[in-house]
Image 1 (tube, rainbow, N blue to C red):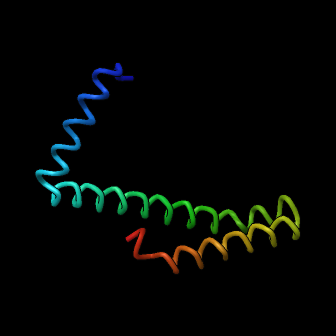
Image 2 (cartoon, rainbow, N blue to C red; image 1 turned 90 degrees about the horizontal axis):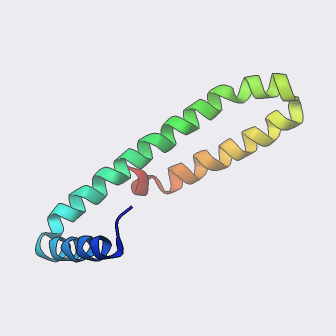
Length: 85
């Protein structure tokens, strides 16, 4: 944790860098989005892979609910793929 004075100085430095070099911040933002997209894709794959085990262990209704949630997730990821890639 930063002290209030250090936090204020950090925000001031950040603001100055953002104003002086917007291309640098655009590159950083793009890398963060790529990393977030990879984690979301990995989570989706793991959840799809666990669907059969969920169905066997918890029953068909739990498997059906899990499948609907995963299908919704897949549709939303496809719909907003430009945000994650």
